[in-house]
Every structure is written in C-alpha cells, then in structure tokens.
Image 1: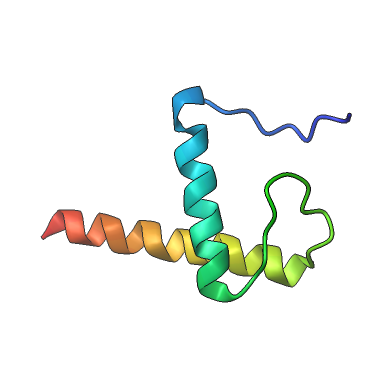
Image 2: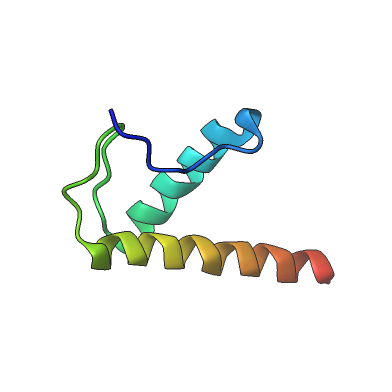
Length: 65
C-alpha cells in the first residue's frame, strides 16, 4: 500500500477528525464509506474539505464571542 504522505500529528484526534469528515460529507450530500473513497470526484472531495473549513471557521468565530 502506498503512503499518501498524510501524518496524524495527534493520533488521539484521528477518530474525531474522521467523524467530523463523515458529518461534513453528509451535509454536502457525498456518500463516504469507512475505508477506501478513491472513487469520489475531485469536486466531491473539495466540497467535503470546504465544508470542514467552513465549520471550523464558524466554531472559531463562536469562540471569539
């Protein structure tokens, strides 16, 4: 199996980040599976990442209030 270069800096956070990713995928209507998801399009992957960033910014802004 080839390594994609992603390294988990805080291994304890991996499960939480995966749940966060799955939640973001559901919100944008992308069906992710546990495990291999190489069959999703770049557009779908970008939508998931964009939703994650949006939610992180919203959480940060809430923390400033």
